[in-house]
Amino acid sequence: MIQHSIELTNIENPTNDNHFPMHKPRRRRTRALAAALLIAFSVSTAAAAAPAMADDTEQVQSAVNAATSEHHIDSYTMSNTVINDQGTLYLPLRSVLNILGATITDNPDNQDRKLKLTTRSGDTQLYYNEDKTAIATSANGTYYPIKTSGDVAYVSQAFIQALTNRVVSVNGATLMLIKTDASLPVWKTLEAYSVDEAYVVEEESARDQIVASAMQYLGVPYVWGGTSPSGFDCSGLVQYVYAQNGISIPRTTYTQINAGTRISLSELQPGDLVFWGGSSPHHVGIYIGDGQYIHAPAPGQTVKIQSVNQYAYDSAVRILD
Image 1 (cartoon, rainbow, N blue to C red):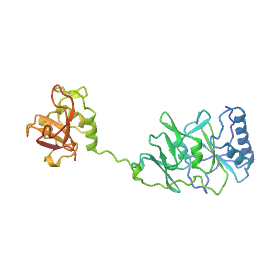
Image 2: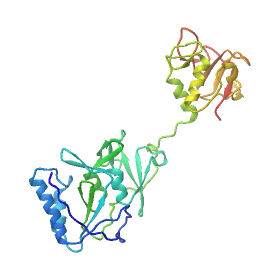
Image 3: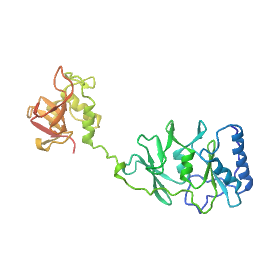
Image 4: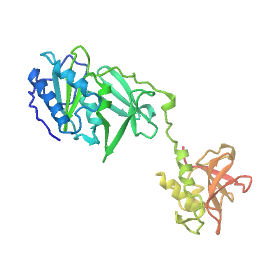
């Protein structure tokens, strides 16, 4: 690919734009610069290289041809170079959003499929698809694919173009924003940030986490004295599951029954411990709700779910507040 280096002069950040970029742009307001940029586009096309503009080369050519002293190019250095995938250019998403003057909030208000952008104009939002492999400016809008390299997410140049009132061009790690209308702010009008119940993912409670952890070991064989996923006894299973969630409790049924607060059977909630044998219990399980519990029953059996109607517990202890 033939590359052209365009030297730009450092000046102060623009003060009449609706953005506050992290890096000062390099700028020159000359027709010669615009002409040089046009030459770069035409040469790359002649050499059968990837177009500098992935979404609308004609728009770039029109902007450059119409360049006057009122037009300028702001040049920034991105954190990573662009990726060229079969002629489509992909830019590092977070770096470009920061350059455009946005502070990024992931999972805002537990909305896992949204990005919140905070700029001088206020808070706006972007949307992910369900598996976070594409991104859009609105829930029902066009979704642009996301590519990852290491821990960096990249989006197509066309998506960045959809965000801004500038004509977007790139060269290696250099991002160039061509201003064609001085009256327009950097950002196009995006949706104002909002909390939508359909996008809110409730955080899993500590009780739910205990139950989910115990469920992982369904089918593990009972082993007398067992304290690992290769084999559990009843109290070994309980101790292991709680430890997996950062809670330390004693090893045996005799000590576990005194590790928390005694509660009545009518007060049981998921994650509570249920016992058999009164004050000197010989067996313990983890209550999961609806009269059911998960436990490691006896030699020759495996970790399983059973009901109080099948094998009734007689006491209960609460470890979690």
